[in-house]
Length: 259
Image (cartoon, rainbow, N blue to C red; front, side):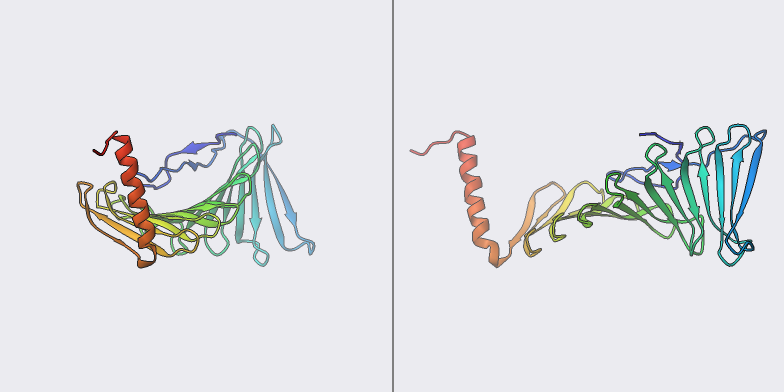
């Protein structure tokens, strides 16, 4: 898979478990490069459809500028191509709000969409990553109002389209909580809350992944010691069996014997 043209100028400020995403930067056209243009009109021969720019020497596409259906001066979208190959690597959309679709130049498939604020086209509101096999969304990153710090990352099973993990971040960009879900039915299975360092576990809530019912929770201090726990009445007998099984395993593992 082609690595494309990458840059580190997308405003992401992530720490700990949040990963920094790559951003496809505009391909610069050399100043001395000769550009040939073709203009296309719609069937009525008055409404401007698009203007295609080519490298005059190689014949490769450089840009396709699409215009609004009812306004010949309003740009609807711009396709951009790698000059050396003529393969599309991104599309800038101006419908309702600005967004950028990024493409893999080998497969031609969309790999990412960057969405911007409707009132400020320089402020990122969200990023969608796509699964190469299905073409469906596999991850959504949501940003705070500053357009730089992440508030939430949703990971999605592209086959079922159910959320499988939901990670929330504090303004300091440490992890606040991680919720996990059954990929088949979308029911919650576990939620882990962290102290402000984003690493030390504060609380764990377990659910029945078959129906999403709450089963139990455990609260820890900052030294990983249990300070409180509770099991839902419906699952208490089940928990007792699990505790006995763990005790027996512990005894055997330590090679203890009874006189």
